[in-house]
Image 1 (cartoon, rainbow, N blue to C red):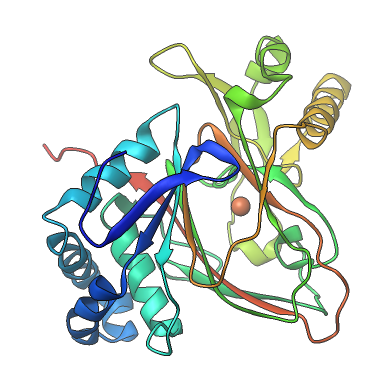
Image 2 (image 1 turned 180 degrees about the horizontal axis):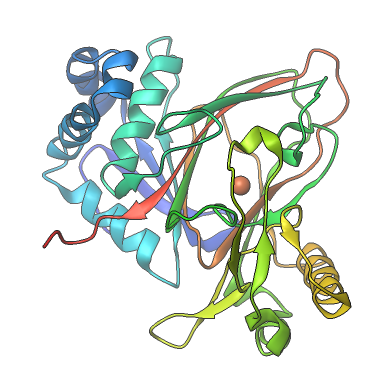
Length: 305
Ligand SMILES: [Fe+2]
């Protein structure tokens, strides 16, 4: 495992494909000054400030952090890391976590505009009561395994999810599944229906005024499967597509190889969106339940011409 001064890098206790990266207090202290240079409004209004923020983090590691994160997230054998402060102090507040998440995202690629939030990231709560129209905020329902960006035109190579804070939470564990660990991958990937175009729409809260078409499975340049799938948004055109989606959904959910993990507040998960699926277990009912999350989805940097 690669070494970076003042970072603790190890394999996740439940999966060799997930790398834990813990940031030492020394680095966090050194970030306070450059992070204070920009307030959240500046980051939201001026995209270049996000690159400055990201560079200030990477410079503290002689640019080793960006190299490591990019290696992990692009490597088919891993594709996922969980990064966060080793110790949570009062200085690690919500604004700090927005900035840290921004810095990490901008060492990997350019975020997509998040239409739900109207900016490059979205912050949202999961609470006891919910009136929304998608599973995102439904605390007591399983959020089934899925990938992100299934219903948007933008390329979604990766996603970043930060747990900002939680109170009165039991349950609600993060679930993840790597395609190469999924027992039924070959079976579903080789079914020609998975290569047909499906129509993908989305409910009103997502603020996407169009529908798109794409298949569920595609093939990468090394002949490995990629998946783009979520249960709620495909609109099957016929019985064949409907039954295929049911079979896919059932066989993902019944997988014994899901990684089920409790993320501590301050944790930031970054995953490749082509071969990692993610979801959430239901919470135990509590009227004071509250979890605040942040998400960023984006494309890898591509060389400019
Ligand atoms: Fe998601």
